[in-house]
Length: 337
Image (cartoon, rainbow, N blue to C red; front, side, top):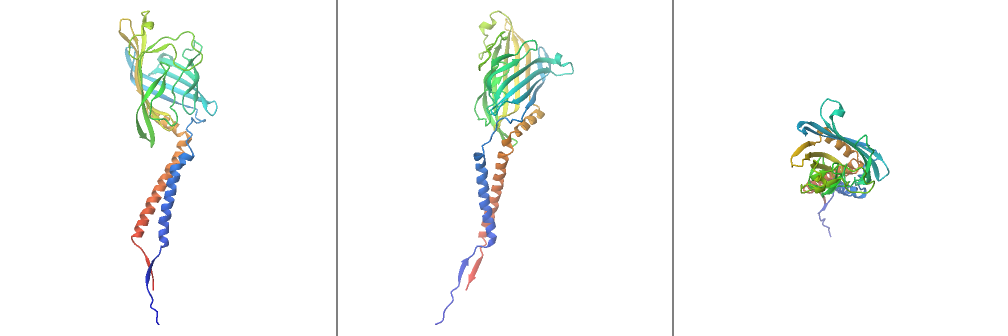
């Protein structure tokens, strides 16, 4: 009896296909790590301890000072002194100056220095602030509330109370939109300060506590405050709008535009202009504030690492999958007979 050999085909997986499959697995692994990395290492976007401050300038080359039109700038210089892991001591010096070549004292319109403790994470003031507006007068303490120098880390698309340096009150800044700048999410806010009566401060002010100072009265309807104008003296009024661009992750204000108007309202209803200002950051100031954003550790470690892993994972997954599909369309067979 003779045997008859039976031939049959056996599929064999060549070694050349192992590399594409490994690429697919590696891509899936890198994508997974890239997605979960920020979860296991949450961003610590507190104000860095080695960040000592910043300076910015709002410039209006066509401001109105009294009855004259001339250039005006407002410069704000911020110094931070670390207090502990949660707070810093902030010292803010601001000055409004006429543009020109004359002596600084002759060009100075107003100046003040404010010192207060600030929460490194939320950006909110802690306790009362010390104000110095006149070299001949001692500093005074008064409560302050809301945000001023920065928004909270992980800013949300909602309204926030933002400190207004004229009324010394926290006035809502409404969320109005978002954008992508330099690959980062930026939120836009608009703060509208209503028609406000500004009254000269009393000789003695509260030494502690949060909230608005008592000598500034908000008058949203624009009507005269009877108790203030009963004497028949001119009344100083103020109105402003601020447009703020905020880096969402760190809360740093990366751009600002301000429209402000101060005037005297006379007893007969006429107006005497004091200062009409409309200015914003220069390109150099915007770039300087972006440099501040880059000082936050999470922006250079966790975020960048996550992005690199996601990009590499996506490339590995696509290349591996494409190579595997092409290989399947060209099968190799081994035959035994």
